[in-house]
Length: 163
Image (cartoon, rainbow, N blue to C red; front, top):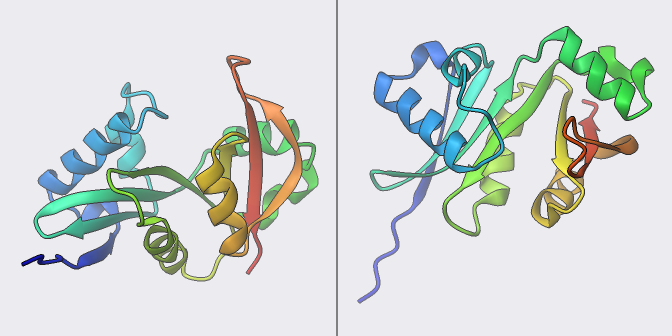
């Protein structure tokens, strides 16, 4: 007999998280391969909200609603050619990683719930088909033009949702 364990979304501010939850989030963010582990804990603790998807006692997906520094926001919006839109967006979606397939919708729903109605932005590689599909599905539109990442390895697209 096949027993399916339901997945549960948990949304917390970093200050509400246990040490185990912070360790889990950080480990998975590094496992996802898109962030530097150097200084990650302090960046995670500065996030607005952390989103976890649990299947039983295992965390299978994470995302964060980050409070980006103004200098970073300026750089990203300028690179995309939309500097004039910077003030519309408060938080950035980041640290997205899933160990299992089929949780993208649930993760994005958690991110939007966590944003509490304010406008958010996200950057994603142009080759990331999953995010290129999910962001527009959840009301995000591409802002400006794709631009090369800092190391000139790949192109990034900037997406925003205006609430």
